[in-house]
Amino acid sequence: MGDKRLGDMDIEAIMGRIRESVNRKIDSGVYSEADIKDVSGAALDESGMERDVLSAQLNLLKNGYDLASVPRATSHRSAFKGWLIVTIKRITLFVLTRFGGAMWEKQAGFNYGVLGALEILSEEIKRVNDENAALRKRLDGLEDKKTHGSGG
Image (cartoon, rainbow, N blue to C red; front, side, top):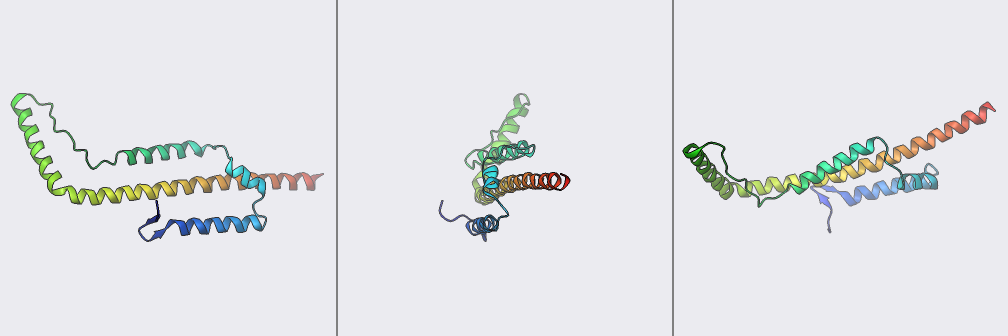
């Protein structure tokens, strides 16, 4: 995709800083090799369902992004009233799509960019949650060792 910038936000630089931070923690012994394997192959916890719903919602919004689609002008009214309402709707839609298209394209482009940013943030939230779960598991293991080691 080339440049992964959202406005003034440099995603590659942010991800690079995150990778450096994780590598420093690995080098200093904060994260063990087992922790890395746990995080990379972690099973979904209870919040996994919420993450799946979020991903599904983002995909639904992204798939609904279609500037070419124009709503159909319909009415449930009978005969003359229905014809009049449909005619007014068609004229209104023609005017709006003809003269408001540039404004809508700009807004739709912005919305699509926001969806992209939300997708990136969603992935980062998933990664941080997985990392936190692995750290909790490691901490529980250390506490168990401490409890069993001092008690025996």
